[in-house]
Length: 131
Image (cartoon, rainbow, N blue to C red; front, side, top):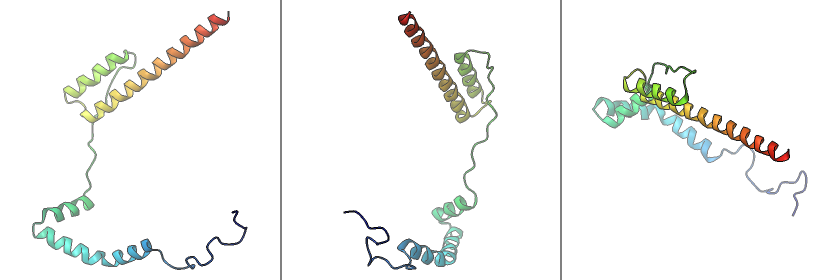
């Protein structure tokens, strides 16, 4: 059955201006926030580790680890670049996370180069077959 233009599929549906549950819940919780924070503050001062963690996570969120830049010579081969990154990780010059990210980037470049070479080979084979 096709809907008719300008005619509601549910004429006895929710009237305009009526708040949905999410809006009602949000307004209710927002009005409780000051008292909830006071309870959380009191528990944290009393030594409740969960309350302390909740407060600290909101006020002082976890900071991302800072790392020195990974340095590689782009004229080196990809395997040499990966070994250079690994050496920088092992000596502590860069963080393991930054090193892993750099090695993943090198691996991505290697896959792109491999794909380019395969495309070139296939095109050469197709051209040789046509001739």
